[in-house]
Length: 206
Figure 1 (cartoon, rainbow, N blue to C red):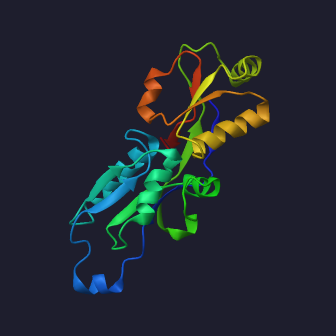
Figure 2: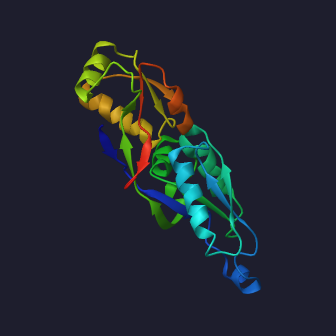
C-alpha cells in the first residue's frame, strides 16, 4: 500500500478573531459554536471534526454544531466560513485544500484571510483498490493504467483537494492516467467498481 504525506495537516481555523468587547460582555462561549466541515459526511475531514467535537465536550459548557458544507473541493464550505459573522461562534475544519482552492480561484479570497489556531490532525494518504481488483502490486496497477489511459477511474474529494493533487502527482511521475470521478464522499469506497482506485486520508497512528 503506497502512502503520500499530506501537504498540510488538518487545521481548525477561526472565521475572525473574537472582538474584545464581546469577551467583556459575556462568558464565552454562551451558545453552541458552529463548526463548518467543508467536506461530505463520513469522509476523513468529517471524522476528524467529530472526534474533535467529542473530545471538547469536557472542556466547554457549550458544544459544537457540526455543519457539513461540501462542494468545489471544499471552496463552498470555506467560503461560508470566510463570510460568516465575525463573532467567534463560527469556526471551520480545513487543511491544505484551503490554499489550493484559493490559488485555483475556486475560493474567492486569499487563504491568509483565515487565522489558524490549532492543529488537530495529521494524516497520510493511501492508494486503495478493492480486494478483488486485478492488481496485486503498485507496479501492476501503474502498468495497467499506462496501457489503458483514461479507463481506470479514480475517486477524489474534488478539483484542488489534496486527494486530487496526490493523484495527479502520481500520474505525472508514472505516466499513468486515470479518469477522475470527483466529489465522492468517504463511504463511497464501499461501492468502488472493479477498476477504480482512490486516495483516502488515514489519521496517523490508525
